[in-house]
Amino acid sequence: MALNFPDSPSPDDEFVSGTTTWKWDGTVWNALDELGALQGIQGITGTGTQGTIGTQGTTGTQGTTGAGTQGTTGTQGTTGTTGTQGTTGTQGTTGTTGTQGTTGGTGTQGTTGAQGTTGGTDITLDTAPVLGGHLQSGGFDIDLADNDQLILGTTGATGDAQLYSDGTNVILQLTAANNVDFTIQGGSSGTEKILHYIDDGSTAIYYEGTAIIGTQSNVTNTSGAYIRANNLSTPTTKDIGFNTLDKQEDNPASVALSEQHCGSVIFADDNTGFTVTVEASGGSTFPIGGMTTIINGNTSVAITVADNSTIVYYLDGATRTDIGATGTIAAGGVANIWREAAGVYFMWGTGITV
Image (tube, rainbow, N blue to C red; front, side, top):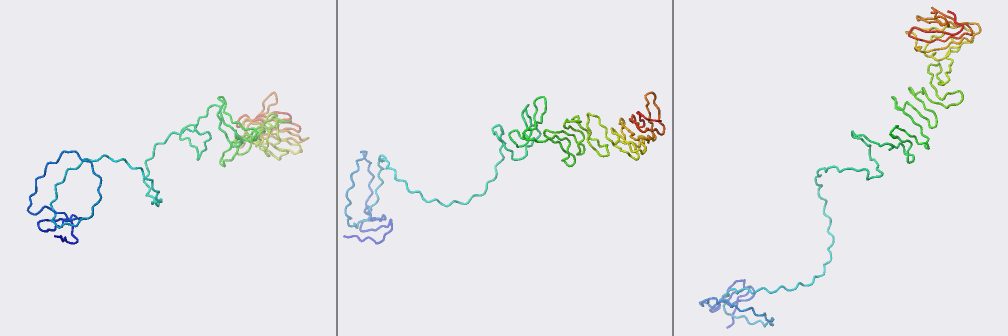
């Protein structure tokens, strides 16, 4: 008799026909043991070796579905031994690389790590170092060995000058080919000359920006050295070696002896008389140790020397005489006046009357 199974069963649905129960496993209906039949005891599993697996037979045609009830599921047989591992298949070809994905956004900046210790610096490895700022000594000295030079200026390999020690002398060597001068300057302006050397020329020492003493070309009538005579009415330089005397006064109306007359001449030749006054310490700037010469070039008129609150001694070659209030220098006479102390002068010469 044909079985009429239900349509669209669900897994584990059962169908009873007669004494047979059928159960749907999701694919086919399986018959269980007949109702009322007793389950036999599981037999002992054989110990024979596993037979070789037969070749797969051809699939038979689907038989008609039986109408018997689903039998009970038998006990699980023991698992057969695992077969040997098959050989690995050949490596398949590598697939093409996919397109580059878009770059993700930049992450937030991480915190700065702790400062590492400063490594040592060896400037001997750099044969041409260039400073990026001022070089500061940091409380240490900069040592130059003998004959190692500090190069000043950028003209040529030796610059404009080299400062160094040869072990005996400290030398500032000017580069001859560069024709440079040497100047020490300072003062409140910062540019006031103190000492100045002219290349292949003179050297001068300055006071308040004016050359006071220096060297000069040793030509006719010069000794090669000069000193500035600021005490003259018209300051000028005086040769040191030849002991020259400049005319400080030329036919004056009167003279009060002061520092400007030191080392110079008071001269008259216009036959007009005048007085030279010798002041005491409070009224005179004529220096102690200073000397002046009075030359009377007149033909007939005398020059008067007046003693104003001081002592003037006249030396005539035999005696020393205080001139008192006044003394005179006759026409054609010459008198030298020298200051020995604050209130003491000495005078000597020719044509002097006291």
